[in-house]
Length: 381
Ligand code: BMA
Image 1 (cartoon, rainbow, N blue to C red):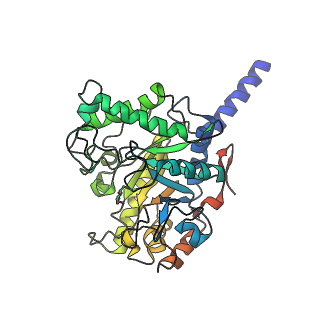
Image 2: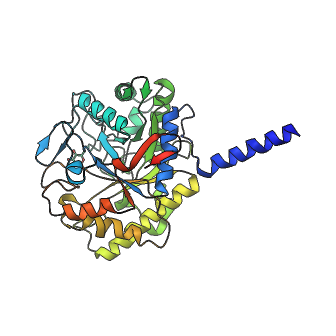
Image 3: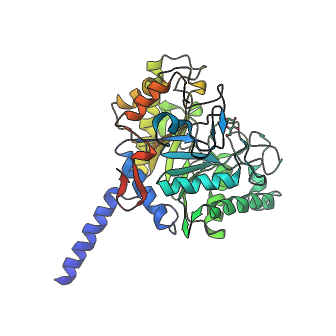
């Protein structure tokens, strides 16, 4: 009898876990990394976190001022998700002149406040030594057996050293790592046409295996993010899954979309673009549900925010009006470099009121709405 009761208790516990659980692909992921994944999944069912690239490092008209952020200046809160790029780790700073020692400091501060960090990697071409936009075929040369394999291992060692610095006391800070993004486009050396699909998959697998098994990095959640401009929405999933390394290699499925959100070259009306945006987000949501992953709009934005109602009319309304489910954990807009190249408002920009409306909407979450997403069953206030 006791054994039967025990069995029942175990079964019910397992069922409960399954109802909301997703475990990281890394079976040795740290406890906090596991909790972060569960919490962002939980959040994705309630609303969408707002994210911004390089938010703490600089904004329009300023750089490296303690505690400053264009988003915080406008709304009183940091974004929930802070994006960084770890290109050029052999230098003191990345390609956008963000110093790595400072970046580590901002990542620690974000973690301590209960914010979330995501990292992309505009890795220089390890074979040609050009930058990430140098399309010289490289992937086959950097995989095991290739003539530049050792050079690639050096890059991975530098990357692992960076992740190891991201800790507070003994706690390794969980990080959403989004390598080799927009790979269905042809503009990066890891992109379509510059390597085969199989080579891309091998590169992804080798990279995550090496970081996990050789370097002992267990604080990462891996995010896959093709680009919308090369997605065929009619051919949904199969187009989306180009280069997908497999369910055992991806925690988060996302996509970058600068196209359906008022790109100057997109001649469709705002309404038509909104429908395409919703369709893409529904697709990512469906892929995530089918695979038990989390979905994200990993990059978006309109350069210079030409439409001063961009945040509500272009981004929020299509999501709110969607007929089918959209469950996206976060959206991240790109960096605020200057008045010509920025994707979030800055104080005084004409889209400021609209952005505040977006932030005040029940659907959007800022860092101040989070309640330590690294703790059990605690995600939102
Ligand atoms: C691009 C632009 C570039 C930048 C690169 C990597 O979208 O913002 O200026 O160097 O991303 O951050």
